[in-house]
Length: 231
Image 1: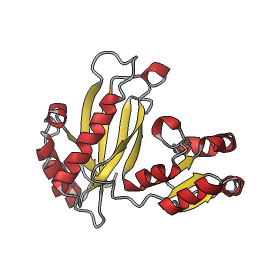
Image 2: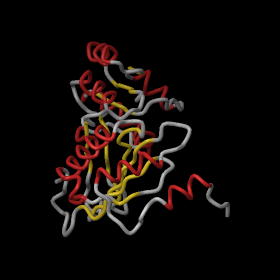
Image 3: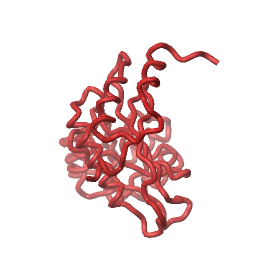
């Protein structure tokens, strides 16, 4: 097994893995350890006390990050006529109907978000096996099935981040870039955690949020005290 490099060892040595850091201290240390040659993504992971195998314990939603995501999000929209024009004017890179369906079935996948008007869902539903595994299937619960496609496209490009709990009760998302200011990162984290708390399912029992961790793409994870985020 390859030994970790000097940068990785130094980053790990700077972290107390038995400590839950306050939000400000965690962000400062995370930025200090984001020393890769690219602008690392700030990632949050939340361990939730839910079992998503049960419908009443599923956690899913969308957060509009106040500081933006720092990503260049490519949006594909299923719409016709006036709604297609609206999507294009809002900045969608790919807009279509049957023609877009055929392109995706042939392997086209150069997009990060798929939005559809309600009348297009019978068509989009045929792509369930393609879009579903990638988490791209439009869903009204996260605002990607909507008649207001222009607003949805602008939200996606402006920093809207979808979240969905995984089988083990872990929820992960990229919520900014390491180059963001500490205040900008803090604002995004607080907004994201607030939306996850609002999405608490009716079937959740006991402690809903069990652990919150913060890291950069190449940096070590730091446990963050939930009270410092919500207080």
